[in-house]
Length: 188
Image (tube, rainbow, N blue to C red; front, side):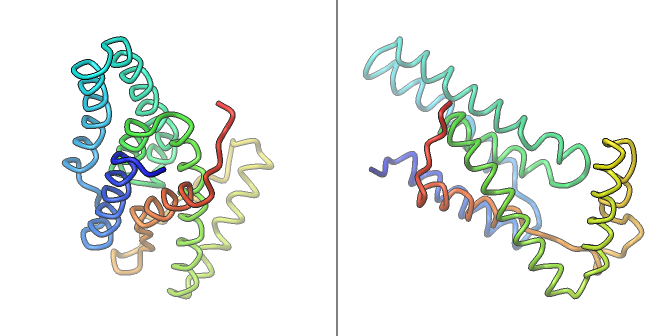
């Protein structure tokens, strides 16, 4: 069954994808208002209409979803693998749908993001970038994280035109849609 929160989520990630393609950013007004609506909207709905106790349960459900969403993509953000808008969008998804849904979404967003990055590498004929990342990952794994990061991270000396850009807003849209289509339930 599709609820209004599901429709809202699909609209938000669809809008994020469009904006990300056009501007290369996912704006704060979209992510922060969505997170606030997820946290406070459910809380106020339950407190004012159904049961105040259910409102506090929603606040906890939504707050945990937001924190887990922010936490999942925080490390890739710190290492420059994604933007702050991506992190805040995953937090907003967690605020709307909770921990289990945000974890499922994060896994699928990462998979879709990887496929989109691979497609971008192939379309831009940048196989050296893929080889460099693979070599860096191998070094990173063999040295247990002590070396290799410098090969996996984007090269800062590349011009803006040559930089590889993957609009993660599209990966978010595809990830959320995939979660709805496969309807997997994690035992959380």
